[in-house]
Length: 492
RNA sequence: CGGGGUGUAGCGUAGCCCGGUUAUCGCGCCACGUUUGGGACGUGGAGGCCGCAGGUUCGAAUCCUGCCACCCCGACCA
Image (cartoon, chains in turn cyan, blue):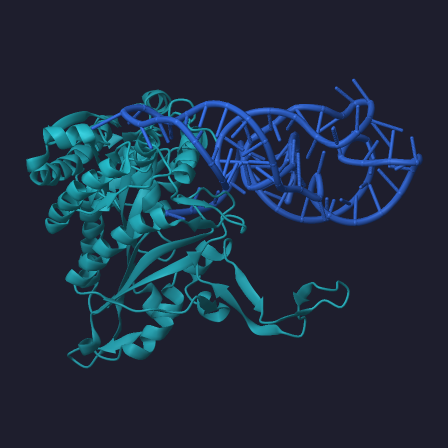
């Protein structure tokens, strides 16, 4: 394995794959399209989970867990949802293996152990959850029902990429039930706001918040809210979605409640989710040709300390000082790791921690002990300075905040300079091909036009941003009247 | 599922067209020594059913047949 990472300019997609593997985040597994998330990658995911989980609970949700398998009859109940996912479902048809009489030492599926009803491995859990909700909801007093689950789902994708699209992925899916349409819409919007806040404030990734066009909606939804992020190669990435499901699932699974007047009505539903795909967004937003760049909020170790020494006595003296520094840093909530492995030289450690995106690096050598100093290096800017050891705790603390802000602002600047308004199809194509990013254009509102534009340019509508005011115009493709601009982009 | 390609040590590879000593090289790994403020160096060493099965041949990584897996390009996609 070569030491250098392929540069982004050379081959963006190769850069991404190498980075994921070399930074020890994940690797491909023996199972086609499925990845192994390695401890370092999983630690980052756990940080995301912890914060999201906190935010969900703060907004009144509770966690629960529903089965991996969905009986086919339940799965097909909501037609649009079933149709939308049918092409990518893994299906369990048997429940037993046996010794293969024709191949000693091999197993085969026992033909007699065929399931009477096939089980679909969940690509999403609306079906199993709504079939359960039917038993939980009788009265308006049972509402709202605000549930989230952390789970794995399987979508048999043709082409997969680590974190961005894998056959199995981890996610959370919220599924809520409400007495009124307005309340459900408010919930769907609220959760899209939660996602937007989380991704922007915690992950330092700017997003465009908006609604999907009809053709890009979740299968079975009446409205899909989303957050869209922009990667460094100019492609958009859907970072999270929140759906207003109307009464579609309530009707499919016959979930009714008695309102205060004693009248029966179907409940109103939402669902919302973010996945390990956010790891991909994280990587592609901040990282550079030296490797991963982690915002301090997501770094498993915010600070790494590297001793520089020749003799055991020197290491001992350094360790004593480092122990004090670590104690002080931990006291103010900073996570810190002392990399005192004697099997690697300092240069190798520098390179490794850079590759793994540790936000701050402290190097302490014998020289520093004499001078009361420490070398402080920032991962995001790759700058180094020698600073006073006595005030290092405050310095680190404020730098971590600074880095978090700087990363966001840098990404925001990139994003904002890559939203381009166009008023003709020529311009549309020109911008997509030369500059990339989001193209803000008038569109006649039809799926046919979206399809044609996609066919010609590979760009799809990403969303109708909340921030866009109604504006009279004409569709860049058909010239028909349009009431608002939408964002188009090539997407992951 | 259509078109193209590749399987050789943990990873990346040479050799294959044109069959012939002990299968090449680099990284990584192990041991010892010297090193340690930006990816150390030297010496020695371990590691291979050459994707699987069959065939041709005195002899197969190399030729033939079948199978399997993976990758790339399309249709699909959080």
